Image (cartoon, rainbow, N blue to C red; front, side, top):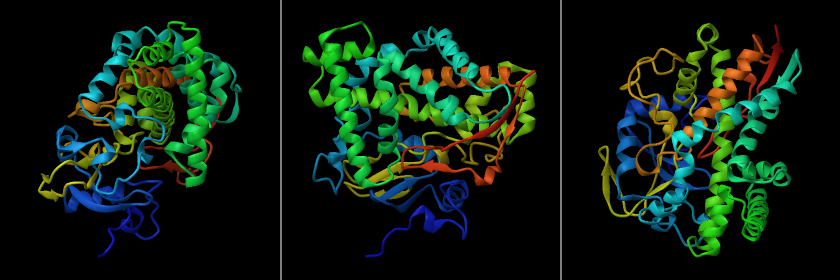
Amino acid sequence: MPTAPTLEELAPAGHDPARDPHPVYAALRARGPVHRVLVPGSGETWLVVSRDAARQALTDPRLSNDIRHSATWDTDGGHALGRNMLQSDPPHHTRLRKLVAGHFTPGRIAALRPRVEALADALLSGLPAEGTVDVVSGYALPLSVAVICELLGVPEDGRDVFHAWSRELVMPTSETAASAAGARLAALIDDLVARKTAAPDGTLLSELAVAGRDGGLAADELLGMVFLLLVAGHETTVNLISAALFALLTHPDQLALVRADPSLTAAAVEEALRHQAPVHSTAFRFAVEPLELAGTAIAAGDAVLVSLAAASRDPAHYADPDRFDLRRTGPAHVAFGHGLHHCLGAPLARVEAETALRRFLARFPTVALAADPATLTWRSSTLLRGLTDLPLRLGQR
């Protein structure tokens, strides 16, 4: 039986889809909304590349987030770091989400803006007035880590190590390294939960620890919840902040608009979400029963992967979709997903990214890329896509 092609095999000769997957998605989308592809390390899946089919797939109850509906499932390997909202369906998903949803409302997140601004300003003060810096490691990453750790209540002595382990899990360099990172991260989370259980302090992590102690969360659900909030709460935002800066600096006309009118920073974030989707694809869905998706027959147990990046550049909905345009009108992007699993942290990501961009551009009125855009490295996985570094030349008034 022939094997489905990978994205690399579908790419034009000499083109690297990790650096820019959109030409591959465009070619697939021209042939139809759903395609059979091979995802290395995960097997064959149906890849959804149109906006309409994406929204259909993300609201079809016959497509489950639970890996146990996969035709190839035989172990709990998919839940190595607990069961979380991303891997659950109603009613379990509903119960888990309700436990934390109140902490991520637009009102609660808006109240955090002054603290995010203070953290951003402190990091910017540590950057040189002039010279070349990597804004991923020097700004986007430490800001995102600090914000989510403060929100959850992770003490500073646990912040330096968890990012490296979480990055290995979401963008693995090898199966062995990912397994080791998972074990270390699980041990770190267990230690944090034990400390919060012994001494509750009113933080979100403390609330979850108490819920685990009192039976509101099973042990694997508690582990999975903390893991998801810690990892999803910073990995995606690091990618968003750096991708938004990259997009503005490679589109000087759009950067000029933001500099002339800083209120357009929010529009820059939204267009970066569409144009450079930090969440590349959703988690895998699995067909509970045979179904038809945008004219394609999906067998029970088949995996379905929805490309949010491809859906947000669908020319059927976005005029000239490859153009980065702050004045764009039309339907909203789907970078945060759609339906029951729409990103819980969307308000936080927006506040962080807008604050990060606004404060950075205000402090450095002259800034430029310090490398050829074509030479920058993008790390990509099934779920995420982001710059490994973003070297910029800085200047001040």
